[in-house]
Length: 147
Image 1 (tube, rainbow, N blue to C red):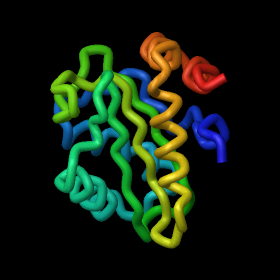
Image 2 (cartoon, rainbow, N blue to C red):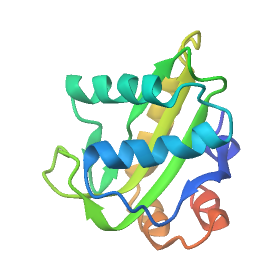
Image 3 (cartoon, rainbow, N blue to C red):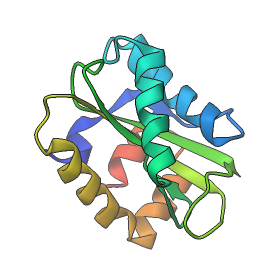
Image 4 (cartoon, one colour):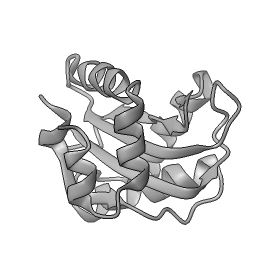
């Protein structure tokens, strides 16, 4: 499964309104609920926030990759979000996060989310890809960043 294949325009927020960790996760979950991918918003929110309590998914370089595995998720999905101002996300480098990828996978997924997480992390190490994502103004820009 390629990142480009699961990034969908309906699951992108190019101008996040959130200003803290909890509200950005809530905002990123909304499109999943609207699209019918997450059945119970509050249950999935708790799953993602419980994961955040174990250790932050703010990996640094302006990036956070919150994720959750739950029976409330019907199909593996990624929500892309971008904050122009940056959001304090307890990132490993102590800097605000601007680029967010929320990964949602069904409970019975084997290692799909780990493969996607690994692939995404590798690609985001590339400063050119990060710059393209930061400058993206359309869903197509986001998808093309991974070419």
